[in-house]
Length: 182
Image 1 (cartoon, rainbow, N blue to C red):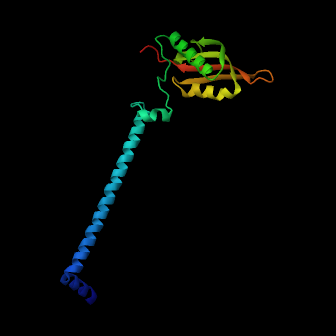
Image 2 (spheres, rainbow, N blue to C red):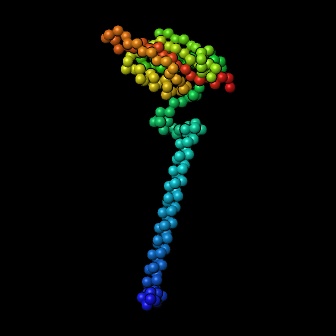
Image 3 (tube, rainbow, N blue to C red):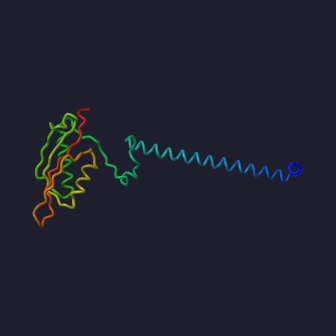
């Protein structure tokens, strides 16, 4: 008990020891305050980044101009556009023909189906008979499914051409959703 009393007496009687203890306590409290503020600011910036990403994913805000090409986000409407289902079907035919041509193939024939089994759900379907190099098949399918408007591969029948040729004959069934007149 005398030891505690002697320590207390020396702190009270020695201003240097008291000032040092006070300064150490002040530095400790200042360090805790600074680290707490830094943690709050870090969380705040994380929340802001997450909110910006959510807005971009929900389509409320276009990506920043510098990041648009890097992100590879397709542009345009997710639905087939057209005042009538026939015009929307023509847009579907044009989109598929453009994708096949871009992949280095050609469309031999195509047929639009606006009254098929999915027509009541607002879908427009088509079937195309195409000729394409085997190496370009993956890029064609990716272009159709990853681009805008959203298209769905309903049917894919592949026939290998005669020996020695790298061409494939495809029977490609594609559908897309049409919203109707706005």
